[in-house]
Image (tube, rainbow, N blue to C red; front, side):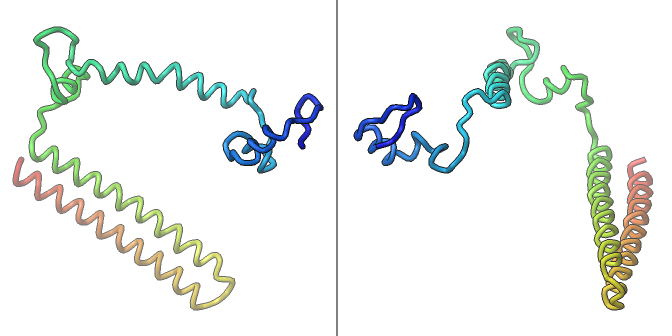
Length: 162
């Protein structure tokens, strides 16, 4: 027999059902407080209920402009959003190169942080100090190679394609 929330005793059948069903009373089984009036949960589910129909409506009208006979597809949507859709090969290649060098810059930053951390936590151990210094030296060398390759690729692309 268990005590119910009202202070009385529950019947044997309901107590058996609560013991056998893991979903019904999972909060009290695991010692978690049951809070059905959590304001964060209420806010989350209210915003979800409010914004989900808007998100699904955005997918419903694939035609740009919403009129019959309008243009369809990504190119039409990009034109409607005032994006430049007439990219040539050099612009696409420059964008690809800029993205690659951005990733390499983040890698350089990570290597500098890693080398500096190793150096600072070496506690006087000469092998760890040397390892940290070598990491920093190779990171700076890699940055020099990246800058030189950017300069060379920019020069080659501008001289070939004008």
